[in-house]
Amino acid sequence: MTPFGPYAELRLFLRVVELGTIRAAARELGLEPSSISRRLSALEARLGTKLLERARAHTRPTEAGRRYYERLRALMAEIDALEADVAGEAERPRGLLRVNSTIDFGQLYLAGWLLDFKALHPGLDVELTLAAQRIDLVAAGVDVAIRVGAQPDSALKSRTLARAERVLVAAPAYLARRGVPTAPADLADHDHIFFLSENRHQPLRLTGPDGTRHEIRRRGGVTINAVMSLVDAAKRGFGLHMGPRWALADALDRGEVVEVLPDYRHEPMPMMAVWAPAVFLPARIRAFVDFIADRVRALPGMEA
Image (cartoon, rainbow, N blue to C red; front, side, top):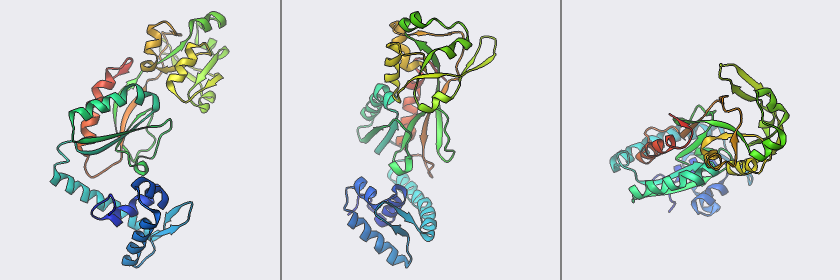
């Protein structure tokens, strides 16, 4: 038996298409690739058409397979919604809740919140994965992801939990060595610490007290795609860093970094809960998003 229960072959077909290979589906489900291949061959034989082009490196749907996948995915969503309604899943959190987040935010806050949520719902299983880069929610089988920044995939559903204030900071020792900026133009002469390498080529955008907008070209510096490591680099005096106040609050309180040009505002970044569209939103997702919304807004520098 596969972990899918009823309609196992159909659900196997969906996961193989979503993950891109039979081997990936086998790893996820703890099955032998040959077992999945036999089941898919039986499905093709029953339908009398080839659904998948199979190779070691990838498995792609044929034209018939692509049409079958699109219709079948919608149909299985309807079936899942019906079964969830009958089983009461639409009303109370149950089953497995899979959550994804960035590494730093997940470790600092989300892991604890998820355990608190689990404690309120003992019948619920939870799984948290942390990654520096955004993942494909459908391919990874994730129920909900917590993301910061604009949401480019309009096919996903989302809810803005809060907007994260960003602050420009530096270590007192760095400013004593390099000078304290007194105007936006001064920032171009300083070293900067970046989250992504492409940020090096993007201007720093500030809004002055009078509403005037400023764009400053930057030079690097240090690039590290982990927020708390960036905070450490700033504390150690490697340059200026613009980051979320929730990550910098402790360092600011201890005086390890100070705000630079505090009268200038930086566009806040939305923090969002994101999930794949479905016929119905399971209670485990809806309740978890409601549960963490107040906690997110209570963090330093979060705006409703």
